[in-house]
Image 1: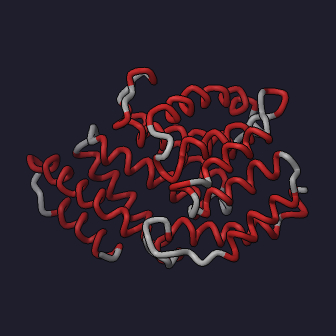
Image 2 (image 1 turned 90 degrees about the vertical axis):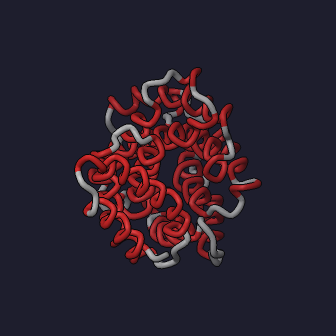
Image 3 (image 1 turned 180 degrees about the horizontal axis):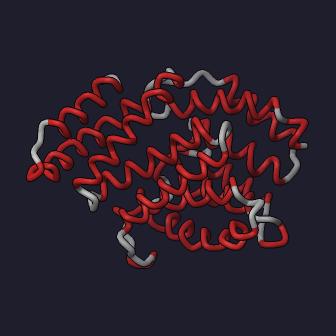
Length: 271
């Protein structure tokens, strides 16, 4: 199923239903969205997805206007806005990327429905991951602001809970978050590049071994925080020399190669 067909299916579902059936249609279409995500993330043409993805995100928001408490759709919207911002926006427009991360965080928080961390179960892990990922990404882009620095400690309890619930979700996502957390925080406020490296290495085992975006974040965050130029170059060159395999990680891996090339060109500015 190509993204154009995927979009058309969602559009048809919205247009063909009457007001009294909007919620039912939204729920049916949300199932199509959920089952089609692997197809989207299996695409190899990064530019094609970059151009198509905004319309799909907008349609998710239209569906949410009819079914605002649909947890699956809320979580997928959070993942969509976070992924779109990471892959396509933050290197070009930090303010726009920040707004998308905020939007993704908002949808994930709605999916969590105000639950305390202690009350969350494994089924809540996806929403918790994207809420924390979006928030961490926003704070990283805005860490020059005192308010963002002050908010960094609030990430740790959520990351620890994610590690308890389902550390392997999204390519060992809990360990990616832990690695990012210790890299983002200034040393005087608990930052620890050595711990960051440790968690990124852990993220690259098992299910996360072939996920190139982790190596990109490892280089961008931990290697630069520790001024480890050798590791920085090693990780980025490994990304550039890897031929992405088909599968649901194909798109983020292709995007990681583009981002790695750009980041490597900025090496002299970072070290």
